[in-house]
Amino acid sequence: MSGKLYVVGTPIGNLGDMSPRAREVLESADFIAAEDTRVTVKLLNHFEIKKPLISYFEHNKYEKGEMIINRILSGENCALVSDAGMPAISDPGEMLVAQAHEKGVRVESVPGPSACVTALSISGMPSGRFCFEGFLSVNKVSRKEHLNEIKDEKRTLIFYEAPHKLLATLNDLFNALGERKIAVVKELTKIHETVLNTTLSAAVSYFKENAPKGEYVLIIEGASPREKVEYTLEQATLMAKNLIENGTPHSAAAKEIAQLTGIKKGDIYAAVLKD
View 1 (tube, rainbow, N blue to C red):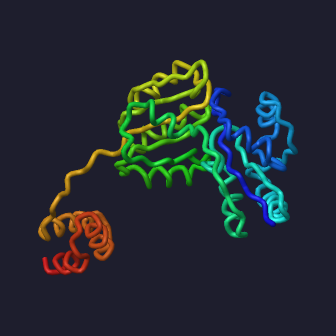
View 2: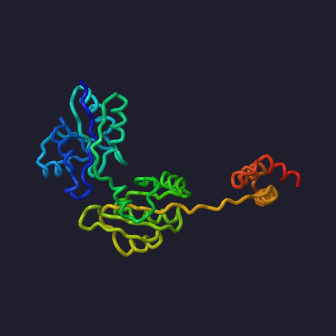
């Protein structure tokens, strides 16, 4: 008979947030898959839990995932934990959960703290609709593409960031999104938990003078709704002509202005040739 995969939320700072059920599952599991066994050992020692640990993280998830699933299929129960918070949220455990479902393994949640929702709840920012964006890529091309994709997003945006990359990220966010309100939340549930409500430009200035310390969650207001502009064919034709006069081919100019105005490319192209 197959075992189960338990997705177990653990404290994000304050050990008092460990739930009784999370302790029970960790105590009863046959083994624990941990993002960093060194971090998890400290948690287990605090609660006097002794269980076999398997290291499961970003760079070994393909190799270890199959092994973990096979052990579960053979009848063992596995508890999946991350370094802090809910596993599988901006976390390699996402793949293990997907593999479990593919193999017909039962997956059960043991809810616990989650930094993104916890930060949003104390940020004072709109929370009715939001987008969790996780960590921005360190790859410049991927990072730029990500920011371009969300620059017009009207829902509240949530990012994670490490202290040594915070200032660069704030700069990139300001350059890509423009001036926005932001809540910079750090060290959730810990002694130095703080919420800095400010703007992106002011946050850049602040952290140039104050070295970031701790782990951060960034809550940024969404883009302001833009008023819809209704263009006439005459206006679109004039815009296309301006592009053509600056060297853009007729067809490319008509296509670009069609995307901007919503007027059909063929109509713009015909009007340009007619004139």
